[in-house]
Image (cartoon, rainbow, N blue to C red):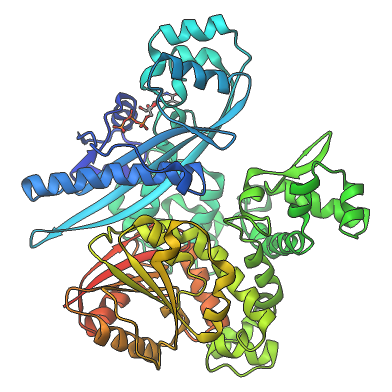
Amino acid sequence: MVLYPVIRKLLEKRVVLASASPRRQEILSNAGLRFEVVPSRFTEKLSKASFPTPYAYAMETAKQKALEVARRMHQKDLRAPDIVIGADTIVALEGLILEKPVDKADAHKMLSRLNGKEHSVFTGVAIVHCSSQGGKLDMDVWEFYEETRVRFSQLSEELLWEYIHSGEPMDKAGGYGIQALGGMLVESIHGDFLNVVGFPLNRFCKKLAELFYPPRPEDLQREKQDSIPAVDTFDNPSDVEGLGSSQGGAQGVRDRPWAEGGKDTKDAGRRPTVESLPPTPVVELIDGYKVSKALFTACKMKVFDLLRDEGPLSTVDIARKIDASECGTGHLLDICVAFGLLDKTDRGYSNTDLASLYLLSDGEYSLHSLAVHNNNHSWHLYNHLESAIREGANQHQRALQITVDDPFQDSFYRNKEKKLQFMRAMHGLINVAARQAATAFDLSRFSSACDLGGCTGALAYQLARQYPGLKVTVFDLPEVVEDAVYFQPGGPQTGQVSFVPGDFFRDSLPEADLYIVCRILHDWSDDKVHQLLSRISSSCKPGGGLLVLEMLPGEDKREARAAVVQSLNMLVQTLGRERTLSEYRSLLQAHGFADVRAAYVGSIVDAVLATRV
Ligand SMILES: Cc1cn([C@@H]2O[C@H](COP(=O)(O)OP(=O)(O)OP(=O)(O)O)[C@@H](O)[C@H]2O)c(=O)[nH]c1=O
C-alpha cells in the first residue's frame, strides 16, 4: 500500500538508493518505494570544520554520495537513473560531529560523551534528479535535513561496555542503534524516530510532494495541520497534478471542502461554519512582521552579544544593561525564547546555538548586520509596498527621498556608514551561502575566476578554500574595494584572492576562465542584464564558464516561497527581479553560452552554470 501519492509517481521512474545502510533500504521499501541499491563509494572525508553547522555537513555528504553514484552509473552504461537518493546520518553534541565508531574504544568514547545528555541526530538527504541528452548527464540536486533530539539516561560503565560488546554500535552513527538494543539507552526523543534510524521518511515524502505537486495557497491550511493525506485522498495522482492554480478543477476540490466555500460555488451547503473553521495560517502571516521587528530590535540592542559575554542573566539585569524598561525587556526576551533564539532557565536567559551561530554581531556566520540593515533600510521601503505594487517600481524616492538610477551607488555608497552597513549585511548573507554556492558544481577545471560585484570577497575566499589551485579576482566598484580590506579573513587562501576596482557596466573586465555573478543579475532590468551578459560574453574565452548564483523561482521543482519573496524584495528595493531557470537559459544562450545546468542548492542562492561556446 502506498500512502503518499507521490511515492506512486516514483514507481514509474528508475530510482536508485545510493546507500549500503540496511535500515534505509528497509524504511524506503516499507514505504512502498521500488528502487535499486547501489552503495556509494564516496568516502566520508569532508572537513567538518569548514561547515557552519553539523547539518550542512550531513547534507553535503549525502549529496556527494548520491552524485558519485549518479556519475558512476552514467559512465558505466550511459544511462543514469532518473533519481538517486543519498543520505547521511550524524550525531551532534556540543559542536562535535560523531559518525560511526572506528573501534570499540571509539564507541566507548562516543557513548560516554552522550551519556546522561541530550544530543541531536541529523540526517541529510539529497535527491538527485538526472537526465541525459546526447550522452551528457544533467543533474539537479534537492537537499534537506531533519533533526531529532535524543536524550540518553545516565548509564553505568558496565552497561556501556556490555552494549559495546554486543557489536551493535559499530556500523551506526554515534555508536548506537535506537531501533534495537540501543533503544534501552534512550530516555526520551523529540522528533522523527526514523530520522534517528537513518532516514527521515515523513519529511522525505513531504519534500517529494513539494517537488512533484507544488503547494497552492489554499493547501497551506493542510500543511499547517502537518497531516499525511488519507489513502483515498489522491486516488489518481494525475488528478492532483492537473489542478489549475486559479479555480481548481472538479477533481481538485474533492479533498478541499473549504475551496467550495467561495461566492461562486453552487454547493453553499458545504460552506464552513464557525464550528468547523479549519486552523488558519493567516493570523500567523499577519503577525509575521511583529516577530521580524522583535528580532531586529534584539539585534540592534545587542541582546545576543550581551548574553554571550555575561549570560545567563535575569530580565532585570538585561534591562539595566541595555538601558530599557524591565517590562519591555521581558516581552522582547519572551519572544526570543518562543522563537528558539534564547533559552530560559532558573539562572536566567542565555543564547541558543542558533543565536550564537547567527546573531552575534561578530560571529563568523553573523546575520546580525543583515537584521539591522532590514530594520534601518528595507523597513522604510516596505512601508510603501502598495505603491511599489501599483507602480511596478522601487520606492527609494518615496521612502528615502532619493532618485535611484543605480540602487547601490545612489542609496548606499554615497555615505561611508551606510556603505559599511550594507557591506556587512551582504557579507553575512553570502558567507552563510558561500559553501553551497562554491560546491554546487565541480569547478576544478577552472584555474582563474572573476567574481563580478563580489563585494567583500566572502564568496571568493570560500572558492579559494574549495579549489586550492584557483585564483579569484573580486571586481567591484572602487568605493567597495577600498573597504573590502576590513572583511579579509586570515589563512592560506588570502594569496589566491585579489581585488580589482571597476564598474562592470563600463570598465574592461579582468581576464578569467570563469565569471561569476552572485546575486547581481536580480538587481537589474532586462536591458541592463543584457548589457552585462554581453560584456561578460566578450571577455569569456570559448570553453570558459559563467556561474550565475540567484534564487530560481517557479519551474515546479521545489518550494519556491523564499524565491518569490526575494523577487518582491527586488521590486521594492532595486530595478530587477528573480528570474526562472528558463529565463536564465534563454538569456545565457542569447549571449553565446550553452550547456546551461542548474543546481538547486539552498535557500539563499541556487546555481546555474553555462559554458561559452
Ligand atoms: C543513530 C543511529 C544510526 N543508525 C545508522 O547509522 C548509520 C549512519 O551512517 P551513514 O554514513 O549515514 O550511512 P552508512 O550506514 O555508512 O551507509 P551509506 O549510506 O552507504 O553511507 C546508518 O546506517 C544508520 O542507519 C542506526 O541504525 N540507528 C541509530 O539509532
